[in-house]
Image (cartoon, rainbow, N blue to C red; front, side, top):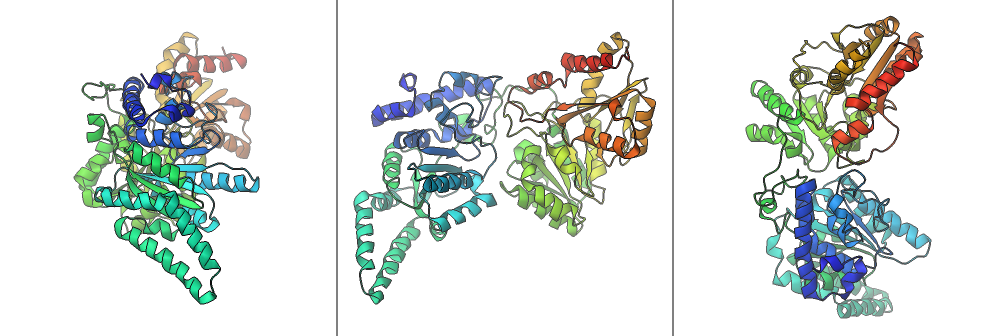
Length: 622
């Protein structure tokens, strides 16, 4: 196998075109084999095989810098950069990250897990390179989805202004531009990237500079002629106006064309944009037919393409069905997501209410402000976004929602530990960044019935509201109690020790009660339900009547729910020493299976029991 002989990008330079094409086939088979067992981003990686091989063939890595926007399409890059063997441990504890990671390899420049960031990062590298008088290429690979983010256009605009040497590769895998990927486009691009053409163009411009002033107008005529011819045939006028030289669109699976074009473009100066068209899931029919399903895939059977799923509905499933039920009797309900309708469960809403569904693309800031506009005129927008991605709309949550007094409902899917996607995707900061915002109500359901009740409750509030839940199966505990704004639920009364669970942590505490009782610990168990507003009287009484109170939350400890209880102690002159917070430490959490991480950080099972028992023994309460 050719793949087994590739240990670094330099090995690609020794291969013939036929060998490179064979390598692409082997690469696809290897990725499918690993992802079928480990799960991961399949469709996007199968789509960039040839593009990645071509870039590694033409660049001089790691001296040159190659950046991947979002980063979930970096599997081929990882395999080609000395990580072929370790790729078998993709997204597993102590294995390879599913995203670029400088801690793993010198070939990875930045950790990139959110969209629309790398053109800005790349431009920063270019400016630093020039200030330090160094010489290397900077190449940023950006998908058409990432380009929909406003940050990408801010960076493109700045690139055109600064005129730095940077190459942006735009990978289109959903745009309907196949007609332009043909003989004429290929021919034009061969001309405009050809060294002889560019040498002639440069010499002609130099010649015109020495002409009398009236004759210099011919330079503008020359440029407009070139742009005019290109824009008749290719959709590059937007990028040309932003100051880029545009090349494409090219067939992103034609290795010969890609290599020759990239080689020529790298010889040019200034901002350049190469536009390639690829097919998501290429080479694996189930992924080609359903790229959205294989975007972030569970393990699957290669022969059938069917995913290996755990039984029981997830929190996402429960939310999805309940929202449709509410929307059938409440015409105010509008569904909004940012390019994640499948992941957030809003696809079912779209199928039932297409005229009341909006997908903004990867534009979370816009989605939040857009929702506020809808709310202003009496609609009730339900905005479903992963917790980690809602961080991208921090200012809009404050300025365009909380300050304005509008009342969208924010459904924060994937709050807490998400597992294999790692630090860029863990939703561990939402309690801290939402808790500081005036007017916000924040809830966390422990189970299926509570999530349904909270959704009903939220759409009838006249203030902004967030409901956070994890990437997990949704239990049914049967411990139901009507909601009252701010009020926690007392599940059982004990003595001396109280356990306050936030969301799913309440269920994890229920699971270890038998272990605690074996140690003669019979605690009061509280289901917080509301993170904000805080029922100050309730928690004041709780602290005064117990010797030790544990606050358990699946989020960062700094600024979390436990911090609000400590603030209450300070304000009411209560004994802060009674409060023990069990949460995640002030660090970026690694990747592993969700269950492994919960155990590793002492949030579930035996390790949670040991943490509680250790603290109880320290205070001599048993």
